Every structure is written in C-alpha cells, then in structure tokens.
Length: 148
Length: 148
Length: 148
Length: 148
Image (cartoon, rainbow over all chains, first blue to last red):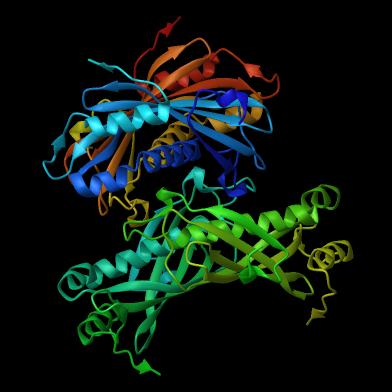
C-alpha cells in the first residue's frame, strides 16, 4: 500500500466519477464527505459492529465531521481513502481521514469525524462497550487510552 | 400555476443547486431523476399512501423510469416539476413527469415512471387496491380505466 | 469477466456505497443513472472522444436515458456495470447498459441512453463523424450499420 | 424570519428530499454540506462575486468546512439554512452556517466554512480585495475587522 497512507489500518480505493466534479471542474467538496463515510462504514464492517448492534441495540451516530482541502482533485483519478481511530473518549471516538491522489502522489484532503456510541433501546449515549474498544484496538494493532 | 404544467395536479417548485451542475456547467442528467422522485413522493403523500402501507403492507416499487432531455438547465433557475398518473394497469400505474424552467419559460425535460403495487407481507405484486385507485382518481379529478 | 456481461466491451466494477441506499434500505433509483454515466464516460474515454472534441468542437450530449429495475440492490455489493453501443443513427447512437450484481449473480438493472453528436462551434447536431464511428466499431469488434 | 436565524443576513428555505435520507431513515450527513454550499453560493450571489471574478480573475475556493450534528432530520421538513460571515483574515474569511428545522423548531446543525480569495490569473492566494470586503460588510450591516 502507498506510503502516504502508512499507519492507517483501513484504506479504500475510490475512483473519482466524472459526474462528481462540479462546474469548477474539480471534485465537489460535498463528495469528500461521502468518501469519508465509505471509509467509516468499511471500518465499522471490520469491527463487525452491525452484528453487535443487532444483539445490543448500541449503534454509531456521527456527531461531527470536518475536512481540509489541500489540493483539487479531478476525474479520472484513483484515490486512497484512509482511516484510523485516533482517540477514544468515554462515549465517543475520533476517526481520522486522509485522502491520497494516486495521480498527484500527494495528500489531497484531511479530515476527521466523531462517532458517538448510542443505545437505541435506551435512547441515550452510552460508554464505549469494552468489546468494541477491543475490536478497535485489534484493528489498530495497539492499545488506546480513553481520555477524559 | 404556469400554463406549461396545466393538467398536472401535483407541481413542485424546485430550485436548481449550483452543486448539481456538472463540469459541462449544466444540470447533470442524474439530478432530473431525483427531481422526478421528489414529485413522485409528493404525489404519494397526497394519496396518503404511507399510512395505507402501514395498515396493509402494500407499498410502491419503482419498476422503470425514463427521461428525455430537451433543453439544458443551469443554476440559478426555479423549475416546476409536474406529475400526473396517466395510465393504470392491473398491478402498476404510470406517472408522467414534466419539468418546466421558469427562467427559460419552456419545457426542459419529459419523463415517466412505472410504479408497481407490491405486498411486502406476501412478497409479491398485487392488483392496485380499489382504495388507492379512488385516491388517484380524486387527485386527477377524473376516472381512470385500467388497461390490460 | 462474468458471463452475464458477455458481449459488452466496456465493464466497470462498481462498489455500492452504504450512503447510496435510501430509507427503503435499497440502492436508490437515482444512483443507477450515475452508474450508467460512469460506464458511458469510460466508453467515451476508450474512444478518446475528449481529445477529439478539443480538435473538432464536436461533443456528446445525452438526449434520453431509461432504466428498468429488476432486482433490489443492497450494500455491500460489487456490481458490474456493462455498456455497448447497440445502434447508430445519422446524428446519434444508442448505448445499452446492463448491471450485474456479483452478490446475487444476476442482472439487476437494464437500461439505455441515446447520445447525440453535437457541434459546440456550430451550435447544432451533426452527423456522427466517420472517425468516431470507426472508433466505436473498433471497441465493439464489428461493423455497425447506420439506421435511418 | 424565524428567531433562531436572527443575525444571519442570508437564509435559504430548503425542503428535505425523501431520497436524501439514508438507510438509518435520517437525512444523510453528506447532504448537510450540500445545504451549506447552497447557502454559501447564495451569499456569493448577493455579493455579486461571480461578475467580480470575471473582471478580476479572483474567485472563491473552499479551504475547509465542518459540521456538528445536533438533532436528526427527517423528510418531510422545511429547513432554514442560514449563513453569515463571522471573521475576516488577510486572504480568507469564515462563514458560519446554522440549520433550523421548522418541524422541530430547533437548531439541528451548526457548521462553518473557510473561503480563500484566489487569483486564477496569478495562480495564488491574494488578500481579500477591498471591494469584496465592502460588499460583505454591506450584507452584514456592520464593519468587520481583519484579524491576523
């Protein structure tokens, strides 16, 4: 895998669609958030969270997200959309996103998103279950301290 | 309402978003189908179909749809997205779509969609319930013959 | 390549994004037209049409398109989006689209689109240039008769 | 106009499309950024920036953007998407976004975006032209200090 995504355990290949460019003839800013979502969902699949949610009622909710656009992207291009969990808190964790253009051989976009662990049965935020924390640490290949 | 949508009982106002234009600097073809959907959903709301679905398990499925693009559309523009039910068959009906640009004072796109009445409890297509047919006729202000 | 797309010279692999499903938890109908577009653009790239357009001013315009939805698609799935030119007319040609789900091992959607050859310098439709017809025939691996 | 958008000089009415909900049956997070963009573009129209860009070559580039999601939004709903310029710096300015649900009578999303003033002729960031700053101050109804 590309050195610019070293340290990111989950990396998606993402082809830029022509129709995702806007009339400035660059990839529209909104689309990057779809790409972030694609990587986030892939991470949740690796955690097998959806099966966990079925048995516990605890699911993910995106509380916030942001992006910094460093370079414009154009079709055609193959992007690498990389994500990792960078911080755990009591009832939420932060995922970092990094998008690399293989055409430009450069990081084009950085971002993050905060995911809350939410009990749909109790209708409230809950602490990150130990089981989910272990799965995250397994994917990351290291232990993560919960910060307060 | 505009004379170019005369005869259409359901008409939505739709502002063209800048970001819906593609790199040819025209409204992207895909977006027209979202606009068709918006008008279709509004029609289903007028029929109060979603409540009917809850009590009967019979819902709509889009079986096919098409569009003919007559003139290019650009932001900014306010479109009128008009729809009517033009034909009933045993287990499906056809909705016509017509999109008018108020900037161009012209019909810019024509289309249609075929909606199947589907029983989610029986997992099969079912004849259009009489109740739904009556609601369609009420919206259209005329009786509609089922063609075979 | 999959037997269900045999006879189609251009085939894209397309991963279904989670966020492309709608609240019926199926791939939303609008997205299929984006997938058609992705295959169409790939075909135009194979024709090297964009370079041709720069030197001649003759570009493609989508005049109409349609889809028939045979089976519902859900994330995750890898689709094959196949296209071929099936008919030439004086100033336009028809592209067939076929989408195969590798999860379902079945054809899920069929469609087509009509592309007009348009001179942006003369601002009118023009006959399909011989050069473009030759490129289409080369991709298709057979000669195509222009129907009137 | 609604009291929850008091102090915002530009407010768009935005109807939530059914097809913008995802399979969690809430408005998908990506769509909020399209709504932010719609408000941003409306603000740029009020500034008449596009005409300014034609005569000077200086256009806007979105450098970063973020959103905090406070409450889930569902179709049908009419949102108010409000924006204001909250800070000027040498070569960029910050726009705040606030989205209010008229169904919930509550603020559902907060966000911002940083817009850089970029000279496409000189291919570099440039200081905010005095003319643009005056137009922003006119829209905001107050003077804004450039912070360093």
